[in-house]
Structures are given as C-alpha cells and as structure tokens.
Amino acid sequence: MDPARNHAPDRAADALSVLNSVFGLPAFRGSQEEIIRHVTDGGNCLVLMPTGGGKSLCYQLPSLLREGCGIVVSPLIALMRDQVAGLLEAGVNAAVLNSTLSFDEASEVERRLLAGDLDLLYVAPERLLTPRCLSLLSQAKIALFAIDEAHCVSQWGHDFRPEYIGLSAIAERFPDVPRIALTATADDMTRKEIVTRLGLDGSPQFISSFDRPNIRYEIVEKQNAPAQLKAFISERHAGDAGVVYCLSRAKVEDTARALTSAGIPALPYHAGLDAGLRARNQDRFINEDGVVIVATIAFGMGIDKPDVRFVAHLDLPKSIEAYYQETGRAGRDGKPSSAWMAYGLSDIVQQRRMIDESTGSEAFKRVSIGKLDALVALAETAGCRRSRLLGYFGEEVTGNNCGNCDNCLSPPQLRDGKIPAQKLLSCAYRTGQRFGAMHLIDVLIGRMTEKVTQFGHDKLTVFGIGRDLNEKQWRAVIRQLVAMGHLRADSEAYNALKLTESARGVLKGETEIMLREAAPGTRLRESRAKSRRGDLAPRAETRPADAGLQASLRAWRADIARQRNVPAYVVLHDSTIDGIAAARPSSLNELRNIAGIGDKKLEHYGDELLALVRTADA
Image (cartoon, rainbow, N blue to C red):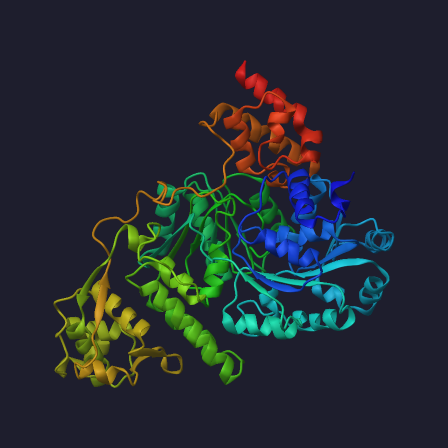
C-alpha cells in the first residue's frame, strides 16, 4: 500500500504511520498532531510555529491523508524547490508551478494535477490568482490549501506582499476545501488581519511557543563592526555556515571582501548582483559546508538550510518581527547556534530617517516607529533578552534567566544615571537642540573644536561638565536616552538630538534613570558551550558518535547530492548522520529506527549506508 494514499478511518493512526514511513520520524512534536488531525478532518486554522518547529508537516501530512492534491501557496521559489526535492526523495509526488518553469514543463505539471498524479503542488501567489490557474484548480480534486508565510498578507507585517491580499479569493471560490495559514512571526495585529483576509473567522488558532532555546542571543555595542564581526566568527564559529545581514548593497560587498581577506569563505548576495552570480552564490551557500553569505534582508526567505550555525546583523533590522524572522534562520536543526548583532546610535537614527522619509501613511509610520522602539528596547534591556523577545509576541515566560543570552550569562551592571542624563539633556537644550551626538559630546567633555568655538558653546555653563565620562560612555548614555524616548533624532535637521516631552521629568529629577554598562571583560567567549538547557535537538544516538564515520557519511552525502543536484540536507540531515554514526547499525531494521530514515530512503540508500558503517568498524 502506498503510504501517501492511506485513507483508513483511524486518521490518528494513519498520520503516525505516514509520519514514520514517509518521513522517518517516530513521533509528533508539540501541537503537530492536533493540527494535522483538525485539517485532515476538513477544518480551517491559523498556525503560528517557530522556524524549525515543523510547520511543513502540518500541511504535508494532511495532503497525503486527504483525497486529492494539497496546494501550497508560497512566495519563496527557493523554498518550493528545496521542499519539493525533499518530498521527492521521500517518495511523495510533488511539483512546483512558478515562473522558473518553461511552458512545456508547466503544461506537464497541469496535466499531472488533473490526472490525480500529484500529492502536493507548490504555487506562487501571483500564479495562483491568474484566471488560468483558478480554472485549472476548479477542475482538479483539491485536498487543502496551505498559505505559507501568511504574515505577508498583512500591511502591518514585516514582509507585506500586495499579491497576498488577493488570496481571499480562495475562500470565496473553494469554500469547502480546508485552508491552513502558517507563519513563524506575527504579532496580535498581524494575526487579526490574516484571519480577516483569509476568511478564517471562527477557526482555531494553534500558537506554539516562539522560543528557540538552542539560539544564543547577543547584542553588542557597535565600535568597529567589521573587526567585531571577524573576531566573532573566528573565535566562536570558525568553519561554520552563517548569514551576515547588512542594510546596503555597498556594505554587503565590503563586508564579504573583508571576511574573505581574513580567510573566512564569504560570498555577497543582493539584488544588484548579476542574477547568475547571485544564484551561484546562493547555491554554494546551500550546498557547501562552512560558507558565510553576506546579504541584504532580501536573502534568506525560503532558505531551508538546517545547519546555519550563526546569524549576524551589522545593522539594526526594522522590527522585532524582522529580527526574529532573520535570526530564526540559524539552528533549524535544533543544535546550538548564535544570533549576534552589533548596534549603535547611528542605527536608530538611520532606521528612524527611513520611516520619516517613507511614502507610507501617518498611521503606518506610527506603527513602524512603535515597532522600531520595541526593537531598540530589546537591544538596550539589561534583563533577559529571550524573555523580552517572547513577551513581545504575548508569550509569558517563567523565571528571569534563560541561561542562553548575553545578559543572563554575563549580566550588565546598572547604575543611577540621573546626573549624566540631566547633563546631556541640558546640553542638548542649551545648544538649541540643533546638533548631533558628536557635537554634544564635544561640549560635554570640553573639546575646543572649530564648531564649538564657532557657535560660542565654550561659553555655555554646560561646557566641560561631562569630563567625568569618556566619549564611549557618553555615546552609551545618548543611545540609551534615545531608546528610553527622552531624546529623538530629527531626520529633517541633520539628525539633531531634540528633547521629548518625557525629558521634562528627567530634568526635574522626577523620573528615575538607570543606565546599563557592559559587564567587564570579553563577553561570551564560552559561546560554543551548551546552555544550561542543553542541546535540545532530538537525538537518536545512545553513545558518542564516531567522528571518522561521520566524515565518511558526509563525504558520501555530498557525492549523492551532487549526482542528484539537490542540497546535501535533502539527502540526509546532519542529525540523521549523527544518529547513524552513534548507533552504527548493522542491519536494515536497525538503520530504519534512526530518525530521518523513511521507507524510500531505506530503499535507495540503505545498503550503501550499512557498507559505510561496516568499513568504519573494520
């Protein structure tokens, strides 16, 4: 019996059987089983599940259990390609329908859909909404519609895509076909818009924990960002695959060159590159080990590479949603990974200027400023970063020490900052609220610069009153007062720092100001050590993995991947290789018990894998 077409009455038993036979997994995680049962029985729902939490199975399994073909709406061509490759490896009849296909290729996919020869079909939203595609779907037997990256439907989301709004047509044209909307990132406002636009009113919402406990969060003060990045990679992630995000194309190019010069294999990726070069760089990152990609935020959506060990930001993202989405590309396999960011006052000013100069409505700008403020508060908090991150998404956290962020591992010092804050605010006020951070620091420290003397600021009572702090410390004070909302950078006045209404309470001594200082010494050198929560990746091994066998398995996997023209992780995930190297199976039955080895992979690769184990044991 084909496990992908099992329609026995006991759907729960069916689901577990297909999970094991097709995907080689022994059990469901979290709310997967409940979601799968609900959709298989014909229900609609919204699923919020973190990256790496197993969202794909929530629509792949019901598509196999229900009659007809599951239609997956995704804007991400790279993700479509990789998921289809993985499904084909597992013996599932899957295909894509997007702009990468020729007319003849697309016609063949359409023929297979109408013939009932497909289990899953991945479609780009703009393709699905064409009259031709809607007519095609109305003639086919459809098992379900899965709308992936559903946050794209919301104008308040961090990755709004206008073509997603038209997906409301699915509910209107196919009211009896179950719909499942899925995303890893959505605040309450975004969730409400997803529900309204996709016709999910009254449908259950399955909201998993947003926590990614294997990711270590660290945010450092930006000093010499390129040098800080090189040190971070060299000391903590040498030889690892990683993603570095920059705001501009020029910075992407400069950073990639600097890393390459330092002996770190790094490739640029941005929309200004030749399309062929961009594709080659992405393919190298996906298919090779230890490659670092330096990119604008256009990169990464739909990248399913499970062994990305770090994500680094050299510029501040736009919101916590964007930060969470981008950092979530690290550690999809559940192994210890890092989310590192270098951040400074200039980042706040730059993002605020981009909002002010945007063509969005005043309401959109207000929401964007609020989202930026929440991210800045995350960067400046002296408390647990994980707790604040999860709290933003409405998730309550027990305890105040996650044991796996920089503030919990090396708590910063807090000091009474009322006097420095008053000195700074007074300086900004007395100089006319017309100058930026550097000039204010010059006045506070008492530097006789040309600009200071030109404007007569050396005659002010605030001149030199801040000599007790150095320039770096004053920068930290300014950054934190901006983060607290007592100062704002006016983008129309060359980023002049202006007092806000709340500054009055600080100047009068009515508002408490506590400033954070970085803990002494170099922080988090022990980053490669596991957190106190341990490595939470599911493991099949019961004894230490054989390093030599691991190397042989990886070399074999790389060769198979090249032959089949698929990413290495589509053949076998790292966790499956680790499981084989630890268990050292001697029979097909023993190999079949390792997570990630389904029926088709056992049939295709079982004998070769056992031969590798025997060679290692000889």
